Length: 387
Image (cartoon, rainbow, N blue to C red; front, side, top):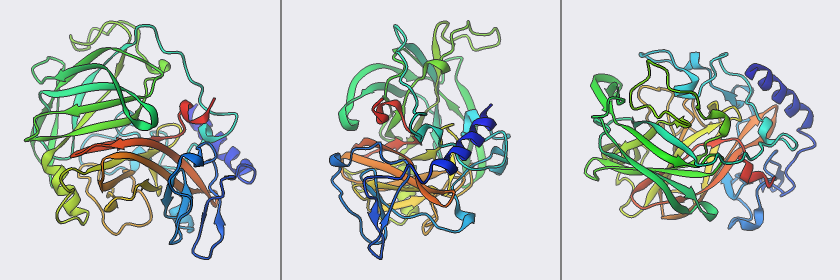
C-alpha cells in the first residue's frame, strides 16, 4: 500500500507541478529573476519578517534557503533502510524512519497537494498514555532520572500549558539497553530509562521536553509531535510485553536527550571553536516526507540565521557534522542551526523533485537558552493548511 502511495504521489507531482506554483513570488536569484517554490502557498507571508532574499537564496516560509543543485544525482530522494550502512542490527522504519520497501526513490509529497491535505482528527476522550524509553543522541551514559514533560503548543510555537510529566528510570523493569559508541567504536552498554505519562491528548500539536542533571545533560524541546488516533494502541498488552506497559489506550514514543559534552563538541566540530554562546540555543532535526521517511538532499534554513549551519554525515552509528557540505542533507537527513538567540524561529526546507523546486515543509518553534529545539519536518500538518 505504501509503495502505491509513493507512485501515486510522484505521478500527481509530475502532472500538477505546473499548476501549483507559489503565488507568493519566491525569492530573487543572483540575476534578479523569481524562483517559484511549489507547495509553499499554505504559509502566510504577512507573518514573516523577511520579504526578500539575497545571494541567490530562495524565499520560502519566512526563511532564505539555498537553492537545490540542478544535477539529477542531487535530486531529493527517500532513504532506504538498506542504504544505512551500519555495524549493528538491520535498520527499520520504526527506529530509523527509512524506507523498508526499497533503496530510496522519489519523496511522497501527497500531503502537500490541495485536495489531499491531512484532515484534523477528533482528540480521544481522556487522552492516552504516552510511554517508552529515553534514548541518548550520540554520546552519553545511562539515561536515568530524565524528566519527560509534555506541553501543548502555544501560539506561534510558544510553550503552552503542561499536560503531564514523568521521570524516566532505569530501575523500572521496562527499561532497555543499547550499545554505547564513542568515535564509532563500541565501549559498552548504556541503560535507557522508562517513563509513562497518562492523559496526553491526541490530534493536538505538542512539545516534548527532556531535562536532567545539568552537569550531564542539556534540555531538549521537541516540536512537531502529534499523536494521531490511528497510531494509538488499544488492545490489551501481549503476554510477552513488559509488566509496566499501560493497559489502556497508549502510544509508544522514544523521547530523546542530549549530553552536555555533545552540546559542546558538536558546535566545535561544525566550525564554532567557542561553541554555542552561553544564553543562546540551537535548532536541530531531520526532513521527512509525507510517509515520515527521511529525505536526502533536502536544503534547510532557519530565520533568524544562526552563527553556524551544518548538515551531518551518513553514518547512523556515529553522526557527526560535515562542514562544507552544501548539497543538502545526507542519508541521515540531519541538520543543525547553531547559536541562535532565544525567541521565535522559522524552519523550512526545499528540494528538487521532477526538475522543480518544491517545499518539503516548514514549522515555527521557539529557541530556548542553553538548550536544543528539535524540529523534524514531516510534511504539512492539518493546522498548517487552514482546513
